[in-house]
Image 1 (tube, rainbow, N blue to C red):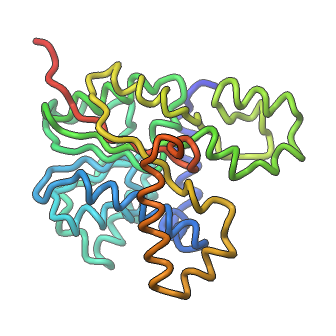
Image 2 (image 1 turned 90 degrees about the vertical axis):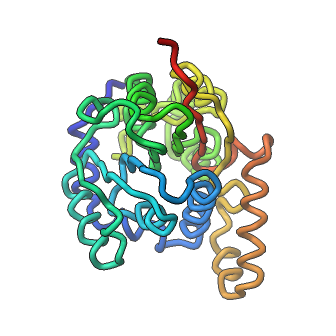
Length: 277
């Protein structure tokens, strides 16, 4: 399926404020947010200049502020940028933001080369661009300083199928075969869903980054242990010590090779290596 930037923009314009609240609707979302924040805390140094591309309304922009970063917020959706501005004022993270830019991850040419220490591409920007993911990865590499780091999360093929296995009951078997073969969720193989994206294997994600001047420092999954266990998560969330124990176990498990492809999202840390002159 070809990348349709206007369709992605329209999707997130319409999704609007729900993008801020999506981590709050289910306990699974709280685990998801914790894993992503844990990755930021592990790799982002205080004082870093960060491009937060696909920033949405700012849940992770807020974390970057708490880490003492200088942030450029970018998104393909003007609605999401306006929400980020608003929440920056309401939640107090706006002072760390240098600017708000309407940008497509495939074309960051308006930004100077080697101008950021970190690029954060959470929420699946690399998944939404389908066949243009090479352009997106190259764009992220161009704006990073040598030694800088790309932190990205993408939709995971096997982890998503694990979470939504009930779809096998409803979709034609041929559709499921096509989804697994291509990694693409499209109107052709799932006409009931408006969420169109490419879902990655971990090896595919590693190959993408290595092909564009990155060394892969870490891979992790999101919600590898906790997928499809919402009732248990709700129970554990009422017991702070057990909830904290779950989060710690999740962080350990999601970094294990056997679990990397088992979460709903894949997270990757790619270090920008020096490019040949």
